[in-house]
Length: 215
Image (tube, rainbow, N blue to C red; front, side, top):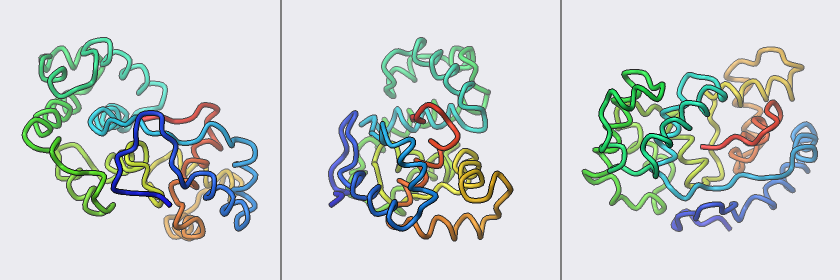
């Protein structure tokens, strides 16, 4: 049984993962085909909520390839992704990595918030909606960004990021021959995955990308 009160460690795969895959394969033949083709590796946690949040900010509204390039430059600039290492750099230095003016402001603001008390929150004991509420209160963090944290750091089992373009394109490929699906149709499909919508979403990313997505 998944425990939301224990912060996942770096590289840890959710305890629910294999059981969720088996159950989903039984109820959803289209998803089963993706799972059987792209079964490994599975989702794992970075074990670092702050770094995942910063990486999600970097990746907002740009391609996966561009995000990887910019992220690599950020890491080269600041080293270990910690609030103090972010704040040790100027706005201009952060911009030089390829961050937009706004993203550089957001990253610095999140680092300040972490030093101002966010690091003290017991994230692992919160339910999903409370964690989302606190995260989206940060400037620059929308629901999608917060959902990436819930999926990739906290390993919550039932998150469906309907605004993620990769998940949507994967669903259209798997369930509708690449044709557009509206939000009602997307939610209807994802409802069949519950309480393992994170797992279904992960395999929609895998359906269109040869490499596992990371945050």
